Length: 110
Length: 121
Image (cartoon, each protein chain N blue to C red):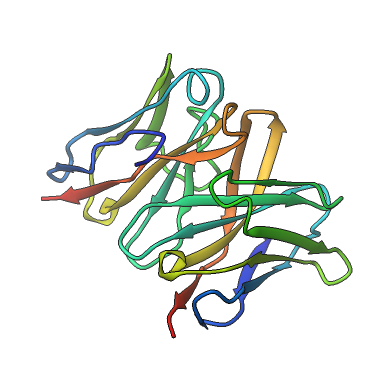
């Protein structure tokens, strides 16, 4: 059971916009920033969004993040087949004094 | 650019100690936190803990009694030990650089490629 809650799956067709949600509590998302990681099949996770809505250098602007209260969202616009991956949200948890992850969302491009 | 590489045995017997090292290249191990994260086959990510170059550590409460981490700045690497392993510790183990701006604001980047450790007799 993950501390942060994500839907296990999401899907969309090429060109479509999809969003993935991440729900937490006041001890994690509510009081700290959220990061998103993309894990392509058979590879290590890669930082996709940090500090709620910042994109690292090299990450295209089709990816965007937002946070409101104790929830966060990742939006992917202009969906492409190469976006098929697992997506994880993460945040620092003040009660656990450690990092917590969501269970991951598997994105399928139909 | 900074690169991380995990190394260590791929097979550990039950109740023995898992030992891994993460070597940092292309940058210094100073001034950052360094984390270990694991992923059981087909499952999600779990943070194990982190260490600063001073030796300060934070561990996941669920693993705290079995985990220890160390850093060797002269070799630019840091290490993980997990004692009394069971099949539930079978996972891909990743090391990652952790940037922390202030408490509660940070992220993992980059990550190592990961190394699969199987616990089996």
